[in-house]
Length: 478
Image (cartoon, rainbow, N blue to C red):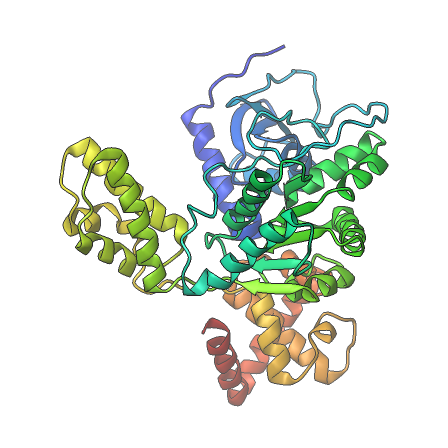
């Protein structure tokens, strides 16, 4: 057995460049979900050894993205031929076995068993390999710590009502689907519902799962030949909370659909959170999207300046109580005005000023905030365009149903809008050609390339089409 050595500076630079290529190739969302938590452990001969914090991530990356990672690495290191992803335990990767191949990390199948059905997981002490354990609940994410305002007030009210109704064995809205972009409080509300319900009635069987944990539990149960026990466990819960729904896919998504139907029939509460409305979750079966849309769909919109100020003031008050420091009103107003991305950046802005004050002794002032928060300040943050936005706008503009844009129909009234939509996806997003093809009904990347070149040629010959596409771009980016 060979012990793990620290990567050299050259190896770290190699991995940094490969990560940058991956982010461009797969886009921000996919990169954050599957690659951001990978660390380089070592490079030995033709083998690149990475580590990941969960078994599921090890298996998923090895099975689905090994070739893509190697391709990114080979730009600078053409001799690399193998990739190995191992579990990182307590910040350390498991030692690499010299003779081991790049076989994905999986647990050995064991005999089916009927483990005790767990209730709410309140901390991180649950056994990570247990296929029937929920995701850990964040102790800080309660209703008391949630700052409500216009953009999230409805979601906050619905979440509190769900917790109370579950305690009283009633169901007001079912299923409930909360959607918003990153950092606007979806996970906070799901955690708060779990906390509130468990505190009021400890007998309730509450399960909170992120989408990647749901997929990991399902895959592990199948490998252990205990899928039936997994299904029965899920269908006996009183309250099921699923986070990051946009990442659920494959057979796990199908299983979720079956579970959702069973729980709704049994009047058990289901709450789901995702980054887009149900109709835009293209990786899910149409029946699942329909069930989610048929419940209560609650959006959380971009924070306005009043809500941003309330959040900053709450965090500033907490820091003042804890560290005895003063946040002037002018500083609170400045942060609320210039940090416009999302709630996590507002928290980060306060934390940075606290750290700057403690490390330098400098008073918290607007000039200190200007100096410290430069990379968080967005005078006018560029809106991230999604393929779902493009499909919606093109469908509406050309009066072609969205499902036909994704279909195999080849009539002129469908082909041209479809080609324009693919062109816009290439022009306005960071998605790769293969990924765009997958989002357009599973098409090959060569089809996308042909469409892009076709539209580019048509624009050269047709000035009106150029104006039309510029109009579509403005509509999408607004």
